[in-house]
Length: 399
Ligand code: GH3
Ligand code: MG
Ligand code: MG
Image 1: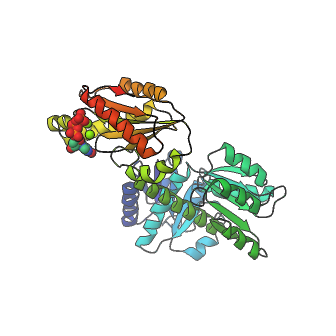
Image 2 (image 1 turned 120 degrees about the vertical axis):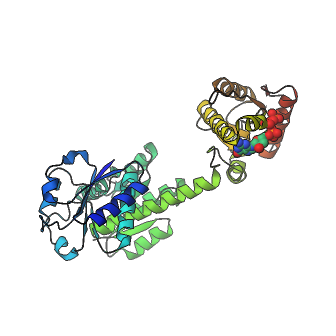
Protein backbone atom coordinates (compact mmCIF):
# COMPACT_ATOMS: atom_id res chain seq x y z
CA UNK A 1 0.00 0.00 0.00
CA UNK A 2 1.31 3.41 -0.91
CA UNK A 3 0.23 6.83 0.29
CA UNK A 4 1.33 10.19 -1.04
CA UNK A 5 1.39 13.07 1.45
CA UNK A 6 1.22 16.50 -0.17
CA UNK A 7 2.13 19.11 2.42
CA UNK A 8 4.42 22.12 2.45
CA UNK A 9 5.25 21.88 6.15
CA UNK A 10 8.04 19.35 6.38
CA UNK A 11 7.56 18.85 10.11
CA UNK A 12 3.91 18.00 9.67
CA UNK A 13 4.41 15.60 6.76
CA UNK A 14 7.25 13.82 8.58
CA UNK A 15 5.10 13.42 11.67
CA UNK A 16 2.19 12.10 9.63
CA UNK A 17 4.42 9.72 7.71
CA UNK A 18 5.96 8.38 10.90
CA UNK A 19 2.61 7.77 12.58
CA UNK A 20 1.09 6.11 9.54
CA UNK A 21 4.04 3.80 8.94
CA UNK A 22 4.24 2.89 12.60
CA UNK A 23 0.56 1.99 12.76
CA UNK A 24 0.16 0.33 9.37
CA UNK A 25 3.07 -1.97 8.87
CA UNK A 26 2.55 -2.77 5.21
CA UNK A 27 2.33 0.90 4.34
CA UNK A 28 4.79 3.17 2.59
CA UNK A 29 4.42 6.96 2.49
CA UNK A 30 6.06 9.41 0.12
CA UNK A 31 5.94 13.17 0.63
CA UNK A 32 5.92 16.15 -1.76
CA UNK A 33 6.00 19.83 -0.87
CA UNK A 34 4.68 21.63 -3.94
CA UNK A 35 2.42 21.40 -6.99
CA UNK A 36 5.54 21.69 -9.13
CA UNK A 37 7.08 18.57 -7.55
CA UNK A 38 3.76 16.74 -7.67
CA UNK A 39 3.66 17.08 -11.45
CA UNK A 40 6.88 15.08 -11.71
CA UNK A 41 5.36 12.08 -9.93
CA UNK A 42 3.44 9.12 -11.35
CA UNK A 43 0.21 9.37 -9.35
CA UNK A 44 -1.03 5.94 -10.44
CA UNK A 45 1.43 4.33 -8.01
CA UNK A 46 -0.57 5.52 -5.01
CA UNK A 47 -3.63 4.11 -3.27
CA UNK A 48 -4.40 7.22 -1.26
CA UNK A 49 -3.56 10.95 -1.25
CA UNK A 50 -3.39 13.03 1.92
CA UNK A 51 -3.59 16.63 0.78
CA UNK A 52 -2.94 19.88 2.55
CA UNK A 53 -5.45 22.30 1.04
CA UNK A 54 -3.13 25.21 0.44
CA UNK A 55 0.37 24.96 -1.01
CA UNK A 56 2.58 27.97 -1.85
CA UNK A 57 2.10 27.28 -5.57
CA UNK A 58 -1.55 26.16 -5.35
CA UNK A 59 -3.52 28.47 -3.09
CA UNK A 60 -6.98 27.52 -4.24
CA UNK A 61 -6.78 23.75 -4.28
CA UNK A 62 -5.88 23.64 -8.01
CA UNK A 63 -3.53 20.73 -7.42
CA UNK A 64 -6.32 18.70 -5.80
CA UNK A 65 -8.31 18.94 -9.02
CA UNK A 66 -5.19 17.75 -10.81
CA UNK A 67 -5.11 14.63 -8.57
CA UNK A 68 -8.85 14.05 -8.89
CA UNK A 69 -8.41 13.52 -12.63
CA UNK A 70 -6.43 10.38 -11.77
CA UNK A 71 -7.96 9.26 -8.48
CA UNK A 72 -10.68 10.27 -6.03
CA UNK A 73 -8.98 8.51 -3.13
CA UNK A 74 -8.21 11.86 -1.56
CA UNK A 75 -8.37 13.05 2.04
CA UNK A 76 -7.95 16.82 2.47
CA UNK A 77 -6.30 18.14 5.61
CA UNK A 78 -6.89 21.85 6.04
CA UNK A 79 -6.82 24.85 8.36
CA UNK A 80 -9.27 26.62 6.08
CA UNK A 81 -12.52 24.78 6.64
CA UNK A 82 -14.79 27.56 5.33
CA UNK A 83 -12.87 28.04 2.08
CA UNK A 84 -12.63 24.33 1.56
CA UNK A 85 -16.35 23.71 2.09
CA UNK A 86 -17.05 26.10 -0.78
CA UNK A 87 -14.82 24.17 -3.16
CA UNK A 88 -16.52 22.44 -6.11
CA UNK A 89 -14.90 19.06 -5.49
CA UNK A 90 -15.77 18.75 -1.81
CA UNK A 91 -18.09 15.81 -2.56
CA UNK A 92 -15.68 14.04 -4.87
CA UNK A 93 -13.07 13.26 -2.22
CA UNK A 94 -13.30 10.65 0.54
CA UNK A 95 -13.24 13.01 3.50
CA UNK A 96 -11.73 16.19 4.86
CA UNK A 97 -10.08 16.76 8.22
CA UNK A 98 -9.56 20.01 10.06
CA UNK A 99 -5.89 20.40 10.84
CA UNK A 100 -5.60 21.71 14.36
CA UNK A 101 -3.60 19.60 16.76
CA UNK A 102 -2.10 16.27 17.55
CA UNK A 103 -5.51 14.59 17.56
CA UNK A 104 -5.95 15.32 13.88
CA UNK A 105 -3.07 12.98 13.18
CA UNK A 106 -4.61 10.32 15.40
CA UNK A 107 -7.89 10.71 13.54
CA UNK A 108 -6.18 10.44 10.14
CA UNK A 109 -4.29 7.32 11.17
CA UNK A 110 -7.48 5.74 12.50
CA UNK A 111 -9.36 6.70 9.36
CA UNK A 112 -6.71 5.34 7.01
CA UNK A 113 -6.54 2.11 9.01
CA UNK A 114 -10.30 1.88 8.73
CA UNK A 115 -10.18 2.29 4.94
CA UNK A 116 -7.79 -0.62 4.63
CA UNK A 117 -9.92 -2.79 6.90
CA UNK A 118 -13.09 -1.88 5.03
CA UNK A 119 -11.75 -3.55 1.89
CA UNK A 120 -12.52 -6.88 3.56
CA UNK A 121 -15.98 -5.94 4.83
CA UNK A 122 -19.23 -6.72 3.01
CA UNK A 123 -22.02 -4.20 3.48
CA UNK A 124 -25.57 -4.75 2.29
CA UNK A 125 -27.71 -1.67 1.58
CA UNK A 126 -31.45 -2.08 1.28
CA UNK A 127 -33.72 0.56 -0.26
CA UNK A 128 -36.60 0.47 -2.74
CA UNK A 129 -35.46 3.71 -4.37
CA UNK A 130 -32.90 2.96 -7.06
CA UNK A 131 -31.51 6.50 -6.79
CA UNK A 132 -30.97 6.26 -3.02
CA UNK A 133 -29.45 2.81 -3.41
CA UNK A 134 -26.98 4.20 -5.91
CA UNK A 135 -26.12 7.10 -3.60
CA UNK A 136 -25.51 4.88 -0.54
CA UNK A 137 -23.47 2.49 -2.64
CA UNK A 138 -21.26 5.29 -3.92
CA UNK A 139 -20.70 6.64 -0.38
CA UNK A 140 -19.87 3.20 0.99
CA UNK A 141 -17.55 2.42 -1.89
CA UNK A 142 -15.78 5.70 -1.27
CA UNK A 143 -14.78 4.39 2.12
CA UNK A 144 -13.74 1.11 0.45
CA UNK A 145 -16.47 -1.29 1.55
CA UNK A 146 -17.59 -4.14 -0.70
CA UNK A 147 -21.20 -3.24 -1.35
CA UNK A 148 -24.22 -5.48 -2.01
CA UNK A 149 -27.64 -3.98 -2.77
CA UNK A 150 -31.23 -5.15 -2.36
CA UNK A 151 -34.55 -3.51 -3.25
CA UNK A 152 -36.54 -4.93 -0.32
CA UNK A 153 -36.24 -7.04 2.83
CA UNK A 154 -36.84 -10.33 1.09
CA UNK A 155 -34.10 -9.75 -1.44
CA UNK A 156 -31.85 -8.69 1.45
CA UNK A 157 -32.50 -11.92 3.38
CA UNK A 158 -31.54 -14.00 0.35
CA UNK A 159 -28.29 -12.06 -0.02
CA UNK A 160 -27.54 -12.47 3.71
CA UNK A 161 -28.11 -16.24 3.42
CA UNK A 162 -25.79 -16.62 0.49
CA UNK A 163 -23.01 -14.19 1.39
CA UNK A 164 -20.89 -13.30 4.34
CA UNK A 165 -22.49 -9.94 5.16
CA UNK A 166 -20.85 -7.92 7.95
CA UNK A 167 -23.17 -4.91 8.09
CA UNK A 168 -26.72 -4.13 6.92
CA UNK A 169 -27.91 -0.58 6.19
CA UNK A 170 -31.65 -0.53 5.55
CA UNK A 171 -34.44 1.87 4.77
CA UNK A 172 -37.67 1.47 6.77
CA UNK A 173 -40.48 1.78 4.24
CA UNK A 174 -40.25 -0.72 1.41
CA UNK A 175 -42.69 -2.93 -0.47
CA UNK A 176 -42.78 -6.76 -0.10
CA UNK A 177 -40.80 -6.72 3.15
CA UNK A 178 -40.07 -3.51 5.06
CA UNK A 179 -37.07 -2.64 7.22
CA UNK A 180 -38.74 -3.63 10.48
CA UNK A 181 -39.66 -7.14 9.23
CA UNK A 182 -36.18 -7.51 7.78
CA UNK A 183 -34.67 -6.61 11.15
CA UNK A 184 -36.89 -9.13 12.97
CA UNK A 185 -35.83 -11.84 10.52
CA UNK A 186 -32.15 -10.95 10.90
CA UNK A 187 -32.33 -10.97 14.70
CA UNK A 188 -33.83 -14.47 14.67
CA UNK A 189 -30.55 -15.68 13.21
CA UNK A 190 -27.92 -13.15 14.30
CA UNK A 191 -27.50 -11.56 17.70
CA UNK A 192 -26.97 -7.81 18.05
CA UNK A 193 -23.24 -8.36 18.47
CA UNK A 194 -23.03 -10.66 15.45
CA UNK A 195 -24.51 -8.57 12.64
CA UNK A 196 -24.96 -4.81 12.99
CA UNK A 197 -28.06 -3.33 11.34
CA UNK A 198 -28.37 0.42 10.75
CA UNK A 199 -31.86 1.74 10.01
CA UNK A 200 -32.34 4.81 7.85
CA UNK A 201 -35.55 6.68 8.48
CA UNK A 202 -37.30 9.85 7.42
CA UNK A 203 -38.33 12.62 9.72
CA UNK A 204 -41.93 11.81 10.67
CA UNK A 205 -41.09 8.24 11.67
CA UNK A 206 -39.85 8.74 15.22
CA UNK A 207 -41.99 6.04 16.85
CA UNK A 208 -41.09 3.61 14.13
CA UNK A 209 -37.36 3.92 14.44
CA UNK A 210 -37.46 3.85 18.22
CA UNK A 211 -39.28 0.56 17.83
CA UNK A 212 -36.55 -0.76 15.56
CA UNK A 213 -33.96 0.16 18.19
CA UNK A 214 -35.91 -1.92 20.69
CA UNK A 215 -36.02 -4.76 18.17
CA UNK A 216 -32.23 -4.78 18.00
CA UNK A 217 -31.18 -2.19 15.45
CA UNK A 218 -27.61 -1.09 16.12
CA UNK A 219 -28.13 2.54 15.20
CA UNK A 220 -30.31 4.77 13.06
CA UNK A 221 -29.67 7.59 10.64
CA UNK A 222 -32.28 10.24 10.10
CA UNK A 223 -32.80 11.56 6.58
CA UNK A 224 -31.61 13.98 5.39
CA UNK A 225 -28.05 13.51 6.60
CA UNK A 226 -24.70 14.89 5.53
CA UNK A 227 -22.42 12.50 3.73
CA UNK A 228 -19.78 13.08 6.44
CA UNK A 229 -22.26 11.99 9.07
CA UNK A 230 -23.03 8.80 7.16
CA UNK A 231 -19.36 7.98 6.66
CA UNK A 232 -18.37 8.65 10.27
CA UNK A 233 -21.28 6.71 11.75
CA UNK A 234 -20.79 3.66 9.57
CA UNK A 235 -17.02 3.66 10.17
CA UNK A 236 -17.56 4.03 13.92
CA UNK A 237 -19.97 1.12 14.01
CA UNK A 238 -17.54 -1.11 12.15
CA UNK A 239 -14.74 -0.02 14.49
CA UNK A 240 -16.80 -1.02 17.53
CA UNK A 241 -17.71 -4.37 15.98
CA UNK A 242 -14.11 -5.07 15.03
CA UNK A 243 -12.96 -4.28 18.56
CA UNK A 244 -15.65 -6.51 19.97
CA UNK A 245 -14.60 -9.36 17.69
CA UNK A 246 -10.96 -8.92 18.68
CA UNK A 247 -11.75 -8.90 22.39
CA UNK A 248 -13.97 -11.95 22.00
CA UNK A 249 -11.25 -13.75 20.09
CA UNK A 250 -8.59 -12.77 22.63
CA UNK A 251 -10.57 -14.01 25.61
CA UNK A 252 -11.39 -17.36 24.02
CA UNK A 253 -8.11 -18.27 22.32
CA UNK A 254 -4.64 -19.12 23.44
CA UNK A 255 -2.26 -16.41 22.16
CA UNK A 256 0.66 -18.74 21.44
CA UNK A 257 -1.04 -21.40 19.33
CA UNK A 258 -4.33 -19.67 18.46
CA UNK A 259 -6.20 -22.79 19.52
CA UNK A 260 -9.25 -22.17 21.72
CA UNK A 261 -8.57 -22.00 25.46
CA UNK A 262 -10.16 -23.54 28.55
CA UNK A 263 -12.61 -20.67 28.87
CA UNK A 264 -13.97 -21.54 25.44
CA UNK A 265 -14.27 -25.14 26.55
CA UNK A 266 -16.32 -24.17 29.57
CA UNK A 267 -18.40 -21.39 28.04
CA UNK A 268 -19.05 -22.59 24.49
CA UNK A 269 -18.18 -26.24 24.00
CA UNK A 270 -20.31 -27.37 26.96
CA UNK A 271 -23.41 -25.93 25.35
CA UNK A 272 -22.51 -27.18 21.86
CA UNK A 273 -22.07 -30.72 23.19
CA UNK A 274 -25.78 -31.42 23.57
CA UNK A 275 -26.62 -30.22 20.07
CA UNK A 276 -24.96 -33.16 18.33
CA UNK A 277 -26.06 -36.76 18.62
CA UNK A 278 -22.82 -38.22 17.28
CA UNK A 279 -19.56 -36.68 18.39
CA UNK A 280 -16.08 -37.66 19.44
CA UNK A 281 -13.32 -36.18 21.50
CA UNK A 282 -9.63 -36.80 20.92
CA UNK A 283 -7.02 -35.87 23.53
CA UNK A 284 -3.54 -35.41 22.06
CA UNK A 285 -0.38 -34.94 24.08
CA UNK A 286 3.12 -34.37 22.71
CA UNK A 287 5.56 -37.08 23.80
CA UNK A 288 8.52 -36.20 25.99
CA UNK A 289 7.94 -32.52 25.46
CA UNK A 290 9.84 -31.62 28.59
CA UNK A 291 12.92 -33.20 27.01
CA UNK A 292 12.44 -31.06 23.87
CA UNK A 293 12.36 -27.94 26.04
CA UNK A 294 15.35 -29.09 28.08
CA UNK A 295 17.40 -30.00 25.02
CA UNK A 296 16.55 -27.23 22.54
CA UNK A 297 15.17 -24.48 24.75
CA UNK A 298 11.75 -23.16 25.61
CA UNK A 299 11.53 -21.08 22.42
CA UNK A 300 11.97 -24.17 20.29
CA UNK A 301 9.26 -25.80 22.39
CA UNK A 302 6.97 -22.89 21.59
CA UNK A 303 7.64 -23.30 17.85
CA UNK A 304 6.74 -26.97 18.07
CA UNK A 305 3.50 -26.18 19.91
CA UNK A 306 2.56 -23.72 17.17
CA UNK A 307 3.46 -26.21 14.47
CA UNK A 308 1.45 -28.94 16.18
CA UNK A 309 -1.73 -26.82 16.21
CA UNK A 310 -1.17 -25.73 12.61
CA UNK A 311 -0.84 -29.36 11.56
CA UNK A 312 -3.95 -30.31 13.53
CA UNK A 313 -5.97 -27.50 11.94
CA UNK A 314 -4.77 -28.47 8.46
CA UNK A 315 -5.80 -32.06 9.03
CA UNK A 316 -9.29 -31.65 10.52
CA UNK A 317 -12.58 -30.34 9.17
CA UNK A 318 -13.70 -26.74 9.52
CA UNK A 319 -16.42 -27.80 11.96
CA UNK A 320 -13.95 -29.57 14.27
CA UNK A 321 -12.69 -27.58 17.23
CA UNK A 322 -9.19 -27.53 18.72
CA UNK A 323 -8.68 -26.52 22.35
CA UNK A 324 -5.40 -26.10 24.22
CA UNK A 325 -6.31 -28.22 27.22
CA UNK A 326 -2.99 -28.01 29.05
CA UNK A 327 0.64 -27.09 28.31
CA UNK A 328 1.20 -29.55 25.46
CA UNK A 329 -2.13 -31.33 25.60
CA UNK A 330 -4.83 -30.56 23.06
CA UNK A 331 -8.45 -31.58 22.75
CA UNK A 332 -10.22 -31.95 19.41
CA UNK A 333 -14.00 -31.92 19.44
CA UNK A 334 -15.44 -33.56 16.33
CA UNK A 335 -19.18 -33.17 15.75
CA UNK A 336 -21.01 -35.77 13.63
CA UNK A 337 -18.03 -38.10 13.92
CA UNK A 338 -17.80 -41.68 15.20
CA UNK A 339 -14.85 -42.97 17.18
CA UNK A 340 -13.59 -44.89 14.13
CA UNK A 341 -13.76 -41.81 11.96
CA UNK A 342 -12.03 -39.76 14.67
CA UNK A 343 -9.27 -42.37 14.70
CA UNK A 344 -8.74 -41.89 10.95
CA UNK A 345 -8.53 -38.12 11.44
CA UNK A 346 -6.02 -38.52 14.27
CA UNK A 347 -3.87 -40.80 12.12
CA UNK A 348 -3.99 -38.14 9.43
CA UNK A 349 -2.55 -35.62 11.92
CA UNK A 350 0.19 -38.12 12.81
CA UNK A 351 1.02 -38.57 9.13
CA UNK A 352 1.07 -34.82 8.49
CA UNK A 353 3.49 -33.92 11.27
CA UNK A 354 6.91 -33.04 9.96
CA UNK A 355 10.09 -31.98 11.79
CA UNK A 356 10.39 -28.36 12.93
CA UNK A 357 13.91 -27.07 12.19
CA UNK A 358 15.05 -30.70 11.95
CA UNK A 359 13.56 -31.63 15.31
CA UNK A 360 11.09 -34.50 15.08
CA UNK A 361 8.30 -34.97 17.58
CA UNK A 362 5.46 -37.43 18.16
CA UNK A 363 2.24 -37.44 20.12
CA UNK A 364 -0.01 -39.92 21.88
CA UNK A 365 -3.78 -39.80 21.73
CA UNK A 366 -6.89 -41.18 23.37
CA UNK A 367 -10.24 -41.03 21.62
CA UNK A 368 -13.78 -41.42 22.99
CA UNK A 369 -17.33 -41.16 21.78
CA UNK A 370 -18.80 -42.51 25.02
CA UNK A 371 -20.10 -40.38 27.89
CA UNK A 372 -23.27 -38.45 28.66
CA UNK A 373 -21.53 -35.13 29.25
CA UNK A 374 -18.54 -33.39 27.75
CA UNK A 375 -16.66 -33.88 31.03
CA UNK A 376 -17.32 -37.63 30.94
CA UNK A 377 -16.22 -37.94 27.33
CA UNK A 378 -13.04 -36.00 28.05
CA UNK A 379 -12.30 -38.20 31.04
CA UNK A 380 -12.64 -41.40 29.00
CA UNK A 381 -10.44 -40.00 26.21
CA UNK A 382 -7.90 -38.87 28.83
CA UNK A 383 -7.76 -42.36 30.37
CA UNK A 384 -7.03 -43.77 26.91
CA UNK A 385 -4.33 -41.14 26.39
CA UNK A 386 -2.76 -42.22 29.66
CA UNK A 387 -2.88 -45.83 28.42
CA UNK A 388 -1.19 -44.79 25.16
CA UNK A 389 1.59 -43.15 27.17
CA UNK A 390 2.02 -46.22 29.37
CA UNK A 391 2.15 -48.57 26.41
CA UNK A 392 5.12 -46.72 24.93
CA UNK A 393 3.81 -43.40 23.45
CA UNK A 394 3.47 -42.39 19.77
CA UNK A 395 0.16 -44.27 19.49
CA UNK A 396 -3.58 -43.74 19.29
CA UNK A 397 -5.98 -45.67 21.52
CA UNK A 398 -9.76 -45.84 21.13
CA UNK A 399 -10.77 -48.60 23.55
P1 GH3 B 1 4.85 -37.22 28.23
O1 GH3 B 1 5.38 -37.92 27.02
O2 GH3 B 1 4.57 -38.17 29.34
O3 GH3 B 1 3.70 -36.38 27.93
O4 GH3 B 1 6.03 -36.29 28.76
P2 GH3 B 1 6.15 -34.75 28.62
O5 GH3 B 1 7.54 -34.36 28.91
O6 GH3 B 1 5.63 -34.33 27.31
O7 GH3 B 1 5.12 -34.24 29.72
P3 GH3 B 1 5.32 -33.37 31.03
O8 GH3 B 1 3.92 -33.11 31.50
O9 GH3 B 1 6.28 -34.00 31.98
O10 GH3 B 1 5.97 -32.02 30.54
C1 GH3 B 1 5.30 -31.09 29.78
C2 GH3 B 1 6.16 -29.91 29.55
O11 GH3 B 1 5.53 -28.93 28.72
C3 GH3 B 1 6.52 -29.18 30.82
C4 GH3 B 1 6.25 -27.73 30.54
O12 GH3 B 1 7.31 -26.91 30.93
C5 GH3 B 1 6.10 -27.69 29.04
N1 GH3 B 1 5.23 -26.62 28.60
C6 GH3 B 1 3.98 -26.31 29.00
N2 GH3 B 1 3.52 -25.20 28.36
C7 GH3 B 1 4.51 -24.81 27.54
C8 GH3 B 1 4.65 -23.72 26.62
O13 GH3 B 1 3.74 -22.88 26.41
N3 GH3 B 1 5.80 -23.61 25.94
C9 GH3 B 1 6.81 -24.50 26.11
N4 GH3 B 1 7.92 -24.35 25.41
N5 GH3 B 1 6.72 -25.51 26.98
C10 GH3 B 1 5.59 -25.68 27.69
MG1 MG C 1 3.55 -34.65 26.90
MG1 MG D 1 1.28 -33.37 29.49
